[in-house]
Image (tube, rainbow, N blue to C red; front, side, top):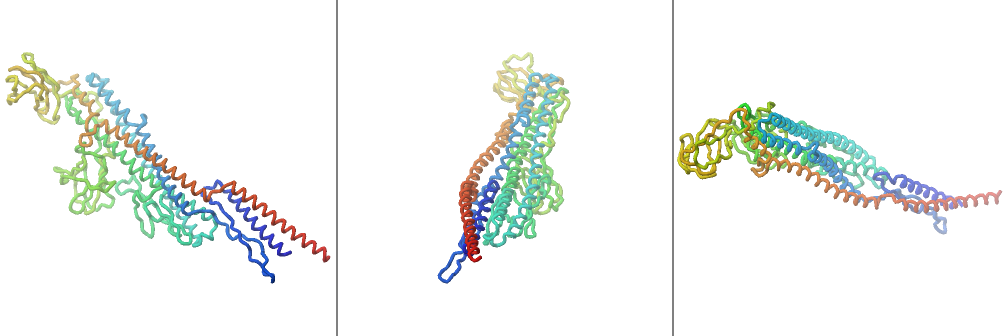
Length: 625
């Protein structure tokens, strides 16, 4: 009788705990990272009654979670990459929106500015059209500055994201290390909920840093970043911190403190959300800002050059229309020498906008690309008479550098900060050609004046009057110099100007070239200014300003689309990995319902055994009473 009672009681307790486990599974069906738990039963040790062994019922040997470490690792890797691409795609889309939206992009106000120049060329002396040019120029400059400020704001967001991410990484790593200590070296004996909690924290940590987790013998989990940096080893957690860039204090870097050492992390050492932020800054934000500056530099210098070739309403040669900041050179915070570098723009067709590292190796200066480390050719000696020239930028070294002193050259990234309209008086717009040509009224030949162009606005004799006299139809002199051979349609050049003459002049025919009078309505230079947007200013004279502007919008849009395509592909991979993990560890309500029904019936049967044992006991008591 006692054996029946003991057997029933063991079964009752075992089935009760199994029902509690099923209930726990159902209660956590929506809990992220929860792994279904399963109860393992075994028979209790039998009792030897002399003639044989009598069973003593059942017992629970283990309540374990149903999990596959391979499926968990696959999901872990997928989550880190998904987090990286989500961050990268989201930020890249914002930059794309800035450049492509007419309310924030440059294209619309760029067209308006050059349209105003075209209008001026139709009526070069009109004050209203001249004022419109200045207003449109101010709007264009404002849009450049506004767009650059928006990009600076995104850089600040990256900094804030790095600070927040570093704090979260430190918190998660510390908690994982604590759980490693609580779980100990025998994960098989650890509470399933603790193991799930650790896996969930590791998933969150890898979501910030990328990487993976490796299980040691016994069950301790070590976590490594995408670049192989140890974040958690056993019960020890590394610390992530932020530090200012030694060249650009406005940008933050990440450093890791482990085993008493602090090491600055390369931008490629982390994946996840933090890696996505760093990749966005390096591959989308920085190139876009540099290219925006390059376009501003090309536009300002090309327009200034064309404007200098014209004459304003006061009869003066054109001055700079735009102000422009020089290339930015920043010394490394650890430099020990006394050298300072001063940069200026040279040949814009060689200007590529790539940031360069300039290093003094103790003997010579070297230039390398900041992003790839590739060596870049450099000419010159660095003196004022013979400056260093590299990628369309020239710079002079003053003072004495020390070995390993380094400087960051940003050719165009900061260009828009100093961009402004240099003139405020509409009459200062140099719309007229500085020189005009005229034919003598007594000419008898068929020579016809064509276009007069300025070849060298700095030629001191440009505005001096000059007379072209023809000896015959095939020869001419300029102010008595010559004779020079002539063929119809050829260009005649002198004093920094060039004139095309068609037809056949007769002997004695003369043509005069002289300074344009103040207040002239001549539009010769206005037409030249209107064509600046089509000037082949970049890539060795193969890309126009208009083409570069369209290329920038395409560049940003392509980066955003590429990130989006990668994100969609990774989302599919992640969904498959999650489905694979859930097929093993996920809670299935139908299965749990079946287990509950089976255990409920078993529990009722065990209860009936106890009731039968009680009836037997009461019968015996009555029999002996």
